[in-house]
Length: 426
Image: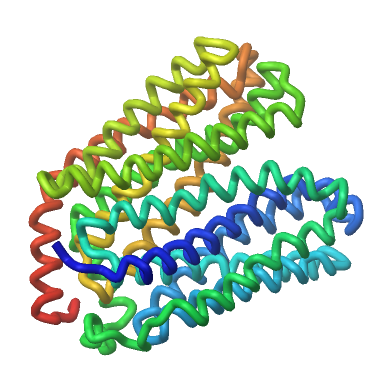
């Protein structure tokens, strides 16, 4: 078993978790601020939807590729500090927006710097956490999604009546600036470590081509994108479903969704990471089998959620979010295992971009379209019908995960051989 400096890695992981959490605090709290922002700046829903939807995802994705390229050539601690500082400062500056263009500029600048966070963090995790702890570390880091959503939905709503939307953005941006100082001072990393010094000559496109020949990688990437397409649509639209179909108020739906997303998501993410670290010692195929079991749990729980009411229904809601949380850690851990050091950051970036743009973006859009179509057709509950229709994506996702099991062991062995021989992708 490899020795690690426990004190150092705990500090690194804590800083990365906090930075990642406040990214999601920013994203979900901005949805609470939409009405006062629109009234004050004189902008419409379509403007906010475009800025915080398609354009945000596009800039976020392109930034991820840039930072994944730079992380092999610059100090990862400094890059993480720059990403946190930039997102914090432009969140603060968003409070001084005076119109559509200044608001759009600050939000897209936030997207640019937030997009650089995860590639750098996955690089740091791959460098400082040995194989037997890596899935656990990734699960702790990714629990920042659920933690951020929880804080964003609850704290963001409380701050607006007291501070107004401008000073709320100021309050949400300050932690990013403070955490940037911590990352700059505490995360020590050379510009190019001995582990990946051989990678300096590799080009971005050779790295990208290398990902395509790793069958277990792109099969799990496809599977995860399809799973996210169904799950992200449910997560985004479920509060609206609770209001429209269950008769809850906006405040009640927000509190229930925030609590379920926070507790269920964190529990699922961390549990899957711990279980993955335990099982892969015995069978590397656990990287694909854990998400496969999780998607079965999600499907059964979703059917039960719509067939029950009251507390039992919310229990199944929590089971759905638990299962969704369990997808992420094993899949991203596999992306770090089947790739040599120089391609780890890019591998995580490609997977996250596919998940964000195609999975989450496409899923949200399809649920909206299906709901409108079911409503026009006279369906009793259009959103419920849309949610259940999206479960069709689970079948091809399951096939991809089963196929990936055939290649995981050989791909991991190849990656370790390349790492030991310091070979470049061609």
